[in-house]
Every structure is written in structure tokens, then in C-alpha cells.
Image 1 (cartoon, rainbow, N blue to C red):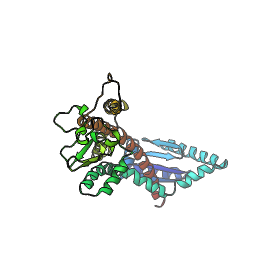
Image 2: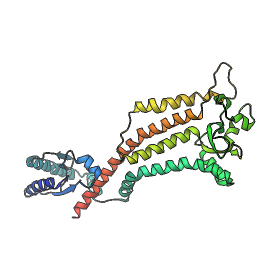
Image 3: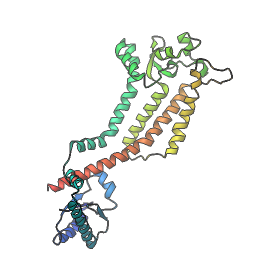
Image 4: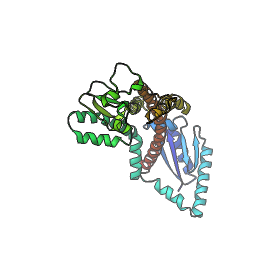
Length: 328
């Protein structure tokens, strides 16, 4: 039997649509369910402006719904169903049956669509927080768990000592001399290296004088901390912040970090021609460019993810309300 689903936002619409469907039902055999959207924010966003909204198979009607149009739509849907049944469309029958039960996958998808932002905030907090735990563990003598953290993050970050933060020491950072920062102890001085060995710079974790190295570099800390910050702002906004345009992301997020990061690469080479300029960034620039990249990347991606999750929530919420209406 054909099924008619009507989405309404108030009692008045409910009465109007029910009256029309009951009248048509005296002439045509079909079932109908009235879905109240007023208690679902996602359904309100989708249907409030076009309600009453009616689905009859693949056909829809909205806003001002005439009884004659409703009758014709139901007849067209019944005729389509008869044709599909005659040709033995098994997939059609399977879709009908699948739409009448809530699966475990539906439940997991609904939970994930509501909770994904908190999962992202949790994992970002963990990802940014653990690197700061490593130097604390070294300071307290817990070398094994500290080294585990450094090892976990090693494939994810270069961990160069002269581009990382240090805590519990004389300074918060120990830059290369080529960075040109006056009044600070350089990495060359704490490592006793006039020519920097990259592998040794990666392995260097610190000591009681220098303090101990954070397991993520300065730029990565800024990237993921700013993504976390935007995630919190996104939640506080009720997930209503809209995504920025892709070209704004390229201009503000990608270009500065690309220039600052790529221009440093020659400085890691063991030997260079004298005519080639060597540039080393500084903690301030790394933090600024990393923060811009992280914040605007999150601004671009998080709202897009939310749009996808809203669609998932809406589909499953509709399905759950429909199934609930069948049992009434």
C-alpha cells in the first residue's frame, strides 16, 4: 500500500492536512503519517519554510497544497508502485523494508552526527596536550613514558630542537644563530655544534639547564592549538558559523605558512653555494603562520563537516519519526 508522509510545524497545519488526507482516503486506499517537526531543530531548518511538506513515493508537495493536487500525486505514486511491483523490482521492496526499521548503524550514525565535534575537540586536546606532558615526565624522571610520547610523535613532526619549545629551563626556545635573535642562548651554544647535525637536533630532548623539549615543534603546536580554539568557538556559536571561501583559506592560511616554511628549507642542507641566501624563521613567525593555518583551516572544514552531519541527522531523525508514527 502506498504511504503518504506529511511534515507539519503546528497544530493548524496538522488539522488541515489530516482533513484533506482523510477525505481522499475515502476514495483511494493508502496510509499516511503526520510528522511534527517542531521538536527537531534539524527538521525545522529543513522544512519550516516549505511546510506543510508531503512525500508520496518519489513525489513531493509543499506550502499551499490543494486537495486536487494531493489526490493526483497519490494516484501517480500508486501507479508507479504498481509498475515496479509488476516488473519485480526487488531493490524497491528492500528499500521499503529498510525504511521501516532502525538499525544499529542508524543509531551509531545518529550519535556520531551529534557528537563528532566533541570527539574532534577531545582528540585535538589530546594531540596538543601529550607533547607538553613529555618534558614534564622527563623532569620528574619518568623517562620511559616520556620517550614513548616522543617516539609516537616522531613520524608526525620533525622535532628539531632549534624549532621547538622548551619548558623548565633557562629559555623557552633555543634558536639557530641564523635566526638573528639577540639576547638569547642559541642552539649552537647548548649543543656545542658550529655546524648543526640535523639528526642530533631531532634527538636532543634537553637537560636540567635547557629544560626539556615539547614533542611537537612550535609551528605544529600553533596549528593544532588554533584548530582546537576554533572548535570551541564553533560549539559556543551553536555550530552556526559558516565556512569561509576556499580562496580566503588559500590567501590567509596557506600562503603565509607556505612562504615561511618553504623559505627555511635550504637552511637544513649540509652544504650550500655561498650565493644562496639562508633564512631561518623565528618562534613568533612560526606561531603566527601556524595559528593562521590552523584557525582558518578549521574555519573552512568544520562548517562543511557540520553540513554533512546535519544531513545525516535529518535523514535518520525523519526515519525514526516515521517509524514511531507507524506504531501509533
